[in-house]
Amino acid sequence: MDLNRRLFMTLSLMGAAGLSLENYAEANSGVKRPEHAMSHMMNWPPKPKGAPPDGKGNYREFHIDVQLMTHEIVPGMLIHTLGFNGQVPGPLLRVKEGEWVKVNFRNKTPLMHTIHWHGLTVPYAMDGVPYVTQPPVMPGKEYVYRFKAEPYGTHFYHCHWGTVLHMHAGMYGGFIVESDNDPIRKKYGYTREYILILSALDSNFIRNELNNMLQRMAQRMTLMKAGRLDSWTTAHFDSLDDFKSALKRGFVPPYARSRRAQASLPSPDFFTINGKSYPATEPIHIRENETIRVRLMNAGSENHHMHLHGHDFLHVCNDGAPLTHPIVGNTLPVGPGKTADIIIKGTNPGIWTFHDHDTRRVTNNGMYPGGCLTTLNYDGLQSHFKPSIALDE
Ligand SMILES: [Cu+2]
Image (cartoon, rainbow, N blue to C red; front, top):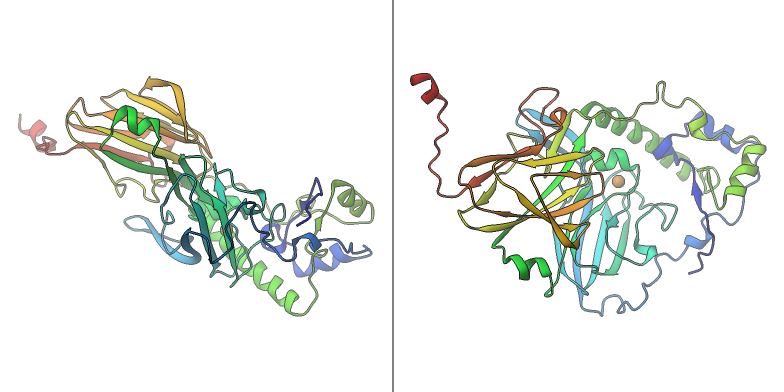
């Protein structure tokens, strides 16, 4: 498949940045439609280089759908959201290095989505970036991703469409590539591992934006059915020059008009670990003298500075790759898109807090305690945390 254009620009499908029925006509007025738009995306996807024929190779096959669902972040706080296979986070995918992976992705929502394999060196056609490497997966449609699982380590996957909303809403999941040669396993011989996916969401933004997108998508589907919407009227261009010449001919990009009365970026009010806020987060378990591995992934848009009480840990992997010189510490910044693996040794029995040290993020709707906080619990420990003791003594 020929995709030799160096720049492929998309400006706002209606679903993403909001051409309304009104400005649809405006966008289309007096502007000649290029014939090349989308042409290179027909017969998509191409076969990844070296991939076994579909249906014949020894694939690890997964079925992932996306659906509109309700999700309880913390007891009493239920939101409408988007989730892979009806859960937040999506299913954990764990494969072996070098395995061929096939993911059948079905879109069961009225919105558009893709899946991006974050940290994996997939062929670009499998990279899941809408209008850059693939058309978006339209409502009711399926898209098949095929790629070889590499490199080994801690990665994740997420929707790459309208990413702020879709990722905040819950379209992310862990992707672990195991290796027989994993030096971390060999060197530290840990006996248990935990996966902590960090995220944050603005519950009001999600509600408003989801409603807006559903509305705009309904308009879009109506226009498509009527044959009034095509690649040009959705405003995507094959090059920067194309785009500039459209501007000269009267095209107004959506960010230049006040689509949203007051354009606003989300300001999260809930902070989650594996989709849950404290006290609904799952504790990490350890025994005295046990070594455990914790894989941290930041699938959200906030910085999280994870701090463990009562212990130093070893930071051993950065974005899945083993560090040649592990770093000892007790606080680790995990920025958006980052993964980090740490090794914890059970040297100090107790119940210890492991939390985001930015105190804004250990709250639920502004109230402490909550948010991005969990505990490291020693197995077999007789809990001595009895608040009444202090009062009695
Ligand atoms: Cu999506």
